[in-house]
Image (cartoon, helix red, strand yellow):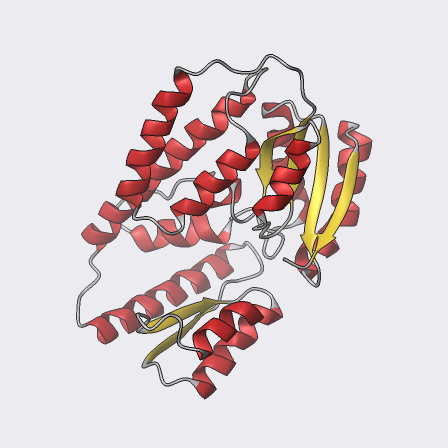
Amino acid sequence: MRAAWDQIVQGKHPYLDGVIIPRSCEAVTFIYQTWKRHLDHEFVDYLNVPWKQTEHTLQFFRKELERVREHLEAFSGQAVSSDALNTTIGLYNRHRALMRRVYDLRAAEHPSISGRNVFDMVMSSFILPKERHMELVSQCLHEIGDAPASKRPRPRILISGGCVIDGELWQLIESCGAIIVADDVNNGARTFWREVPEGDDPMDGLARTYMRAPCGFNTGISDRFAFVSDLIARYRVQGVIFAVNKRCESEAFDYPELEKKIREQLGKPMTYSSSTS
């Protein structure tokens, strides 16, 4: 967050007209107050994401999304209709389904794509328009389908953490002879594992789906463990690496209980890595 804020202050993103900052860790939350106080962007909004998952918090989050929607409409001068939302939700759902196809390649006994390559594919999806990214991913899937997979057995690893954005870490793990076949990170499977329902009330679908993203920030231990244990079974994971950023409280607080459950109930070896990236 310090690096991102430094770039903003230096004007390295002159194309920005505004920003929406979600409630998460303190570093992100306080950027909102700092941005509002020190920069003169007309549109600076704060999305209050609830910590609990109840019907009451669902209604609260839905109202928050409605408020941001109205704020965007007033700022842009354009209405955000339910039809337009459903069209975009459909596009993103098709992208999510395509990315899950990429992940399914790693369920094979001898995966035909490396964890580092999947990491690069996911990270590029945050930059490219979804239509263009889907074209490139479809092309990759076609080419991968024609390429022979290595038959050399490799330990199958799952990475768990918050935002594990250092590609060199993924490369390092696989350079030691392992292969990353699954992940439980914000810039990975959590992004596209669940689709948003399309229907008469797209705001309700958005609220239900995003409120239940399997992140340590807003998900209890039982749900976190259910998500991780499903990945471990689906991708036949043999070991787990917890790559937690320093001062990421939600992931660090979850680690002891997750480690205990995985060790006692699933019997998988684990290790813990703390990084500053």
